[in-house]
Image (cartoon, rainbow, N blue to C red; front, side, top):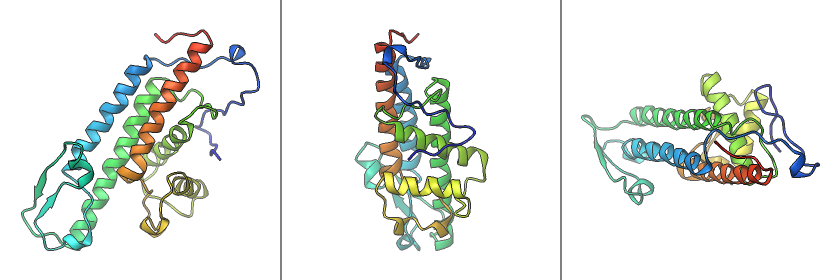
Length: 214
């Protein structure tokens, strides 16, 4: 079930014929919006390929090879540290890379907002869940400290929604870490694909209604 809030667009119940509905216009053609989404995604993969998630088992090492996820997509690299990694340093690096993921969410939201995707979210269009989750994550990342507060009922609802929608093992993302679960492969990648599906479907609806995108 979608969350509601003061900065969330009103849900639309499609009870009237499509021809009688006014659908918000996207600022750009769908292929340009999709291209823009993919450019944002490529930028994230590039920067994260040289700042991958580190495990405690890497303590004592001075090198960090690119994770297979990035290497298989053409972003292979090896990072060399001047000093051997400690568990404290690993923790700090992982928090920083989570911050990079947060920045991607905020930038992607800003781009789609510029394209007028968020005027209204239609919950009968494929990809609406990912678009709605993106909007709520941006709210927490842009208007709070960015850390997950399990005592905030709305933040907890967002956390639980991510766990359920993306079929995550909550044991891998304990609430005590105070970080929203936004791994690249399990959350951000399908979130991006969902946003692309939504953009294409939204444009199709606009076309059905006789509207055109500038």
